[in-house]
Structure formats: C-alpha cells, structure tokens
Image 1 (tube, rainbow, N blue to C red):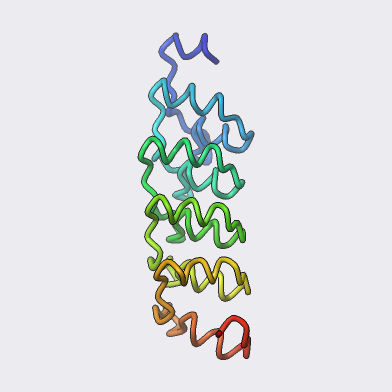
Image 2: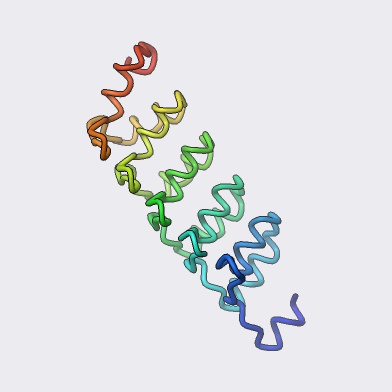
Amino acid sequence: VEVLLTKQVEVNVQNFDGSTPLHLCCFQNNIVMVELLIKAGASIDLADNMGNTPLHTAVDHGLVEIVELYLEKEVNLNVQNINGDTPLHRSCFRNNIKMVELLISAGATINVGNINGDTALYIAVHNSFFEITELLLNNQANVNVQNIDGSCALKFLCSRDNLKMVE
C-alpha cells in the first residue's frame, strides 16, 4: 500500500456501493492502513451510497481506536446517513456504551432525530439499554423530543410500565 500511495493513486475512489478504501479498512479493523490513507489525503467525510461515512462504519464495528483517530482529524460527528442516523444513533443501536461516551465527550449532538424523529435517547429507551439511557440523561438528553409518531422517550417508557427506566 505504501508503494501504491507513492504512485498518486486515487485514495477516494468508490466501489459499486460507494465504499471508499477508508470504509473497507474499517471493515478489516486496519488502523495502520487508515493512517496511511489519511496521510495520503483520503477524505474522512466521504459517504457511501447509504450516506454512511467511514466514521459510521467504524462506529458500527465498535472500532474505538479508529474512531479516536477520526476525532483527532476533526471528523463531522453529526453527519447523518440516508436514514438520518448519526454515529451517535448507530452506537446506541449497537448498545456500545464506550462508543456513546466517546462521541458525547467529543461533542456529538445528543437531541438530533433521524428520519423517524428518533433521538439517541429514544433508541436507547426503546431497546431497554439502561446504561446508555442513564448516560444520555446525564448529558442533557431531552425526554420530551417527539418523533414523527408523536412518541417520546418518556411516553414510551410509561407505555411499557418500566419503572426502573422511568425512575
């Protein structure tokens, strides 16, 4: 790869699904290649056909070291894919508390909704992810943000009669 990169290879080339070499390195958890590609000018914000950036991919695979590298490079934390999901939404879907902590500490916007209006908190509550729910609430997540169905985290909890989560 180092030899190829000296030959002015197009580091942002996209395949049939829009994945770039950075996306593919995330699939392989190859931080050395990610570093080489970034050094050669690869875009950390270039999305695939589903709107997922390499950050989305790294978050989906739980690759903390690669996410930390992207954060050092000032990646767009709040980029939304075609479903409106940010990396924070994806880490909540995956119940990855460490990733949620990392994204929040880096400044991810907490109360943004996806195309359904679901916030990170709503996703955590809907899936009974207690630790993530607590973390989001401790970081000013709004329990009253309504999704497109008019539901919000608090309403959902009350409808499920989940006393532990409501408390």
